Length: 426
Image 1: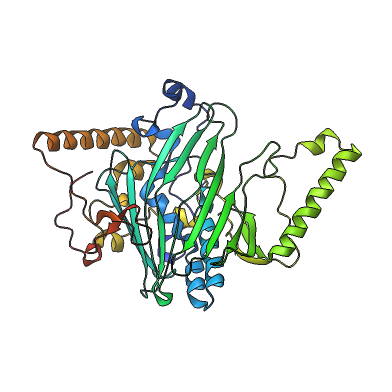
Image 2: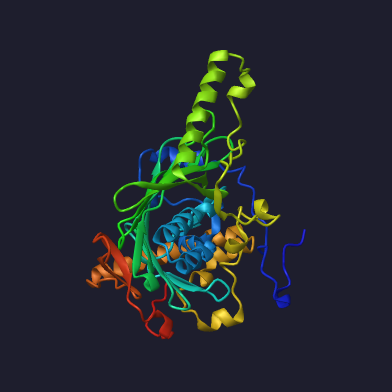
């Protein structure tokens, strides 16, 4: 099979240079059984469980549906804007679906930039701390029409059969045209069946999007799977005006789509639904097969009168052989002469272990990963000997301007393209 695309045709890349290796011969359990209850950032995992992207690149996937931010900007009604921002918050985690490979831990000082003229943004991210691992990012509209920034500390916990990643950190979206700022935190992500069986991913928890200018809120609940997989991937929520009155309801699946509907219709639908399932129970005519639907098998029921807010783009046909990447993800590590000429030597695209894995050379990837981790440890040792403090280049620590919580803020300067002072980390 030939996976290369012709780079000269100007077509979007829809493939990686090589398909992924089968993970079937490797047992995560043999590594993890020593680590029950431990924090996973301290454990070195074999490269076979990775996907060929750095966590900084994975974060950049928040930006895939930037059109929702542009859509929010065009509306003069703050509730309409909130609908778009809430849809953006859900869409930002949609690419996690079936992404069971672990991104590479960024090295301290690693950076990643992405400029997308077609989507109207540029983004820069930096690994600003190693223990705990914190990644800061800052994206802005090319027309200066929005700023989207945050810092994420993916707290990983191992629970025996599953690994849970809680993305600690605030996410902020600013719309200068409307003098508005929105903040939220992302849901928890969990990878199941890491010992035996099919790996699968679920996201759960409550996400509260706050408009700091108007006091309006959107409360979203990412539902856990539930006993028979009935609730898998479902998201439900509502928007409250400043007097805490429900304005409308949102519902959908973070893997697929989000809809909006007025609250009365939503609640009537819920009531009828509940009544129908109780009637079904009392008539005792259910066969066993109906009691256990396959997880994810049940499709979303669209309530009459709903309006579609967002729908996901289908993944490329070869996605399953390519770490379940979206088209957007496949393009993140692409390196052409133009990009290479401008990026600093700390950019993730230049990381040799990720590049080797993407090219299908798993042994080289493994060697390089080990070498880079040792190089990082040696550098840290040297710093501690000479009392050198590590200085972040493009971000500084400070309070979030909208809710005061601890954050990492962009120091500007990155896009001036002077990288003479950046460290040699690869």
